[in-house]
Length: 581
Image (cartoon, rainbow, N blue to C red; front, side, top):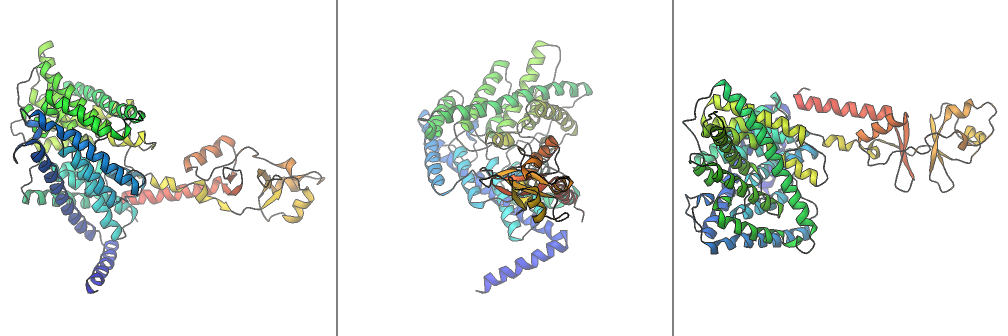
């Protein structure tokens, strides 16, 4: 009994210290980062172990770098699909809803994530990647890093803004550990998971990322990106050319994302095949891998081979087509994972194709390695998001500031084009296909709490629409209320009667129904603040009734109160964002 009591006392102590000093927040964030680093090591080791077992590769070998794999070993892909089918069926029996990823958690739920759901996502991702599907492990890394941080933050009863920062720190630390790049992890947290960069969140995030990378270095865990030490020099004209590469990567990235969504839609509509989509996808991937083994897994080994290889136009077109097709099949047919590393690999190929095409068809000459690295960052930005994230990845890969600037140039072009023509990253596009409307991890969840049902004043005064004006005056003296709800014979909503209008009627004859306003205008309890204010503006009213689906009156909401509540929450969110009191 002593240990639980000590644990409770420790939590109480830490809660108090965190409220009093941000230093403790940084210290605990570093611990969260260390946990994320350990989770990254476990996930990566488990997936690679499956690949060793099923494909007969050695510990130091990467699956996508294998020159030849025995055809009989390709049975692993449909077997993996079958395991995902069974696991998904068993999971659906006991759970409802879709697991929440860090982006959705921070955008809509104030950083709250389920550890149990996250473990299942990690299992699905490890199985998908471990059996050879063309997906990366980054989804599992970020999921477990964010979920661990959310669990710790909720145990410490952190404020909403601090919990969101913790989730970003955990997810970013996991990505930083996977790539051996703390700056990349930190900006992944800022740009993709938290949605903002402020003085208030920089210290916890950076501390978590540094701790995660330190853990993986101590464990000699191999990062996922090759380090280039002899990156070529660039001139000013190259930046203009790489802007064109950013444009190419933007449209290619949008095409890949739309193909994934279209494939999911088509395969889910075939009722007979729907439950067995991963198995069918596994069969298709096995056939594709027989033609091109580099389509297997995320593509880490293939990138090592292709970054410095002498590849011609047709070879590059073939590799790009087969890898993109493998990624679309993997995700569209129900395998779990991300496009982070696949987009890096595809981007390196697209960049090299861009350089080779220019050199063959024009007099323009760009170093293929430089184009590969810039394309790597630009396509990843088009699909995943985060211009600074990918630019710092190139910086930590090459140590070349000129190449980093070129990557940032191409990334900004790609990001701008994708936002204007498509509007989503891959993670928010998947949420959009599920019916959500968020486009980033910015905290908009608080807006969803400002519904008409939550803000209305209940039990408003009411009267029958057929009642006389004299009866109204007897029941509601002047000054007792501004308005009264009129009800029809079935006690359903009929309209609103302004008290002033009744007392302004000189003769006092007639019924309440003659003075009713807003007869066909009302609010539903689930309406958001945006819909509420739009309704007020559209009808020019300053108060409306809130009705259920049967037109029974639930309450009344005034425009003034809704505006005040919105302003209060907006100011609170601004203080959380800037870290001010």
